[in-house]
Length: 291
Image (cartoon, rainbow, N blue to C red; front, side, top):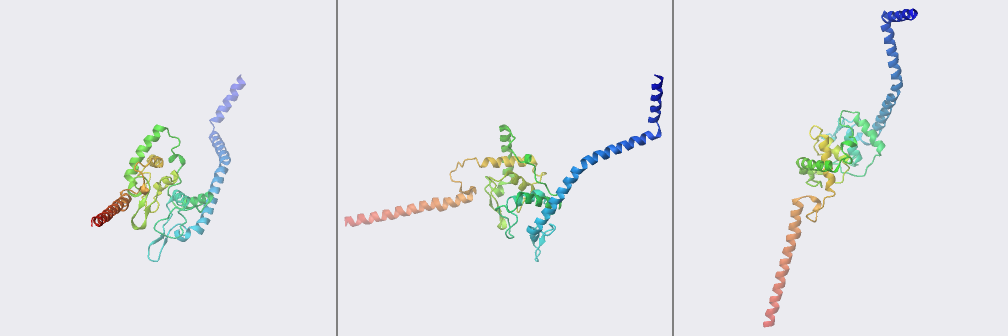
């Protein structure tokens, strides 16, 4: 027992000695270094794969995009000073995913607005372009599915979301896309495309990045939950019946008025002329018979 007490006393004196703190620091550094050595390779692999993706995206960019947007995404000006291709330094990966994923880019030729067409790049190539353009600035990233998907909502939550989305759409979108999302003409040769039946991700990215003539609705203007509400409202338009009969493209009173004048009133005028001509022939035959 006395021997144990003596040993404990020696250990206690060593712990209080000047080398105890140094040994504790060395042990801590060794433990931290071991943990870093175990975890660092995975992070290094991730960084290396991202660098390879950016490098691949730059090669694709130089071939298919640099002619209009510049070799480093700085944009290209014409000799007259107009913008040939806009700068991409801060548009972010979300803008690339929208433009490339809907086939709007690359454009066949410069114009006021890029129409939607068949997709040129594969999904892997699109990811590489997104990585490269995303590395040029601080633009928005491609949104996660949970931000725009409505699949996990209950029926009551979905109805509430649709109601709020219809109000937001009415206040911010109907001026260009009309009340049922069928699109319409815009000044200077532009147009608001039809947004019914569009993938929810692209609707979200369009609001987030403001492509072509569209205004940019950042998360500060329209929060993510309100963007999802607009998407929920648009989803219901495809299932809504046309109570007025023919939709006439859903373009509103202009197309309906033209149709009413050309078809409706035109038919009435033609019918009136036919009646007048028929009455005249009947009167002539009656006069001949009496004579």
